[in-house]
Amino acid sequence: QVQLVESGGGSVQTGGTLRVSCRVRAYAATRYCWGWFRQAPGGEREAVATIGRARETTPFYSDSVEGRFTISQDSAENTLYLEMSNLKPEDTAMYFCGATEPRYSGLWCPPVVKVYTYWGQGIQVNVSS
Image (cartoon, rainbow, N blue to C red; front, side, top):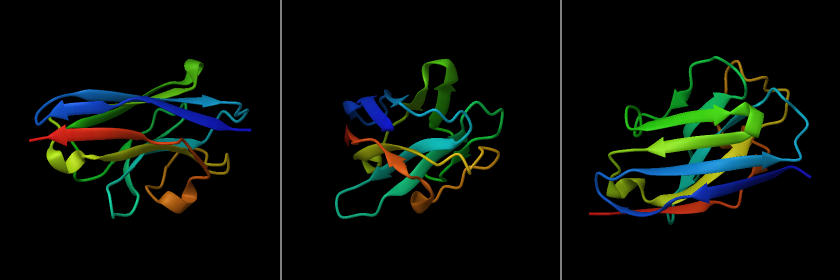
């Protein structure tokens, strides 16, 4: 059974930096899309950043985080990272790691929630003003 396990996150003041990690376990596929999504209270889950696993392709970033967040990966460790800098109160949300089925080979990773089959349990990020 595929498992995605997030770690990191926490609370920080405006302008601070946090990093979240996602370890993928029991997933035999080597080519797929994975990424970070977030959901604020009362809101819908939205894509933050996506990237192809083990692909040298340009990541997707949402307009709201472009230039502040960086997605990266360690394919050997099956781990995905999101470095978040210059954090703002509006970044406060539950952050989720998602991964697709292998039919999304990673050349282009759609920032569309329904495309992602496997999800982590989520991790809270709080940014205070």
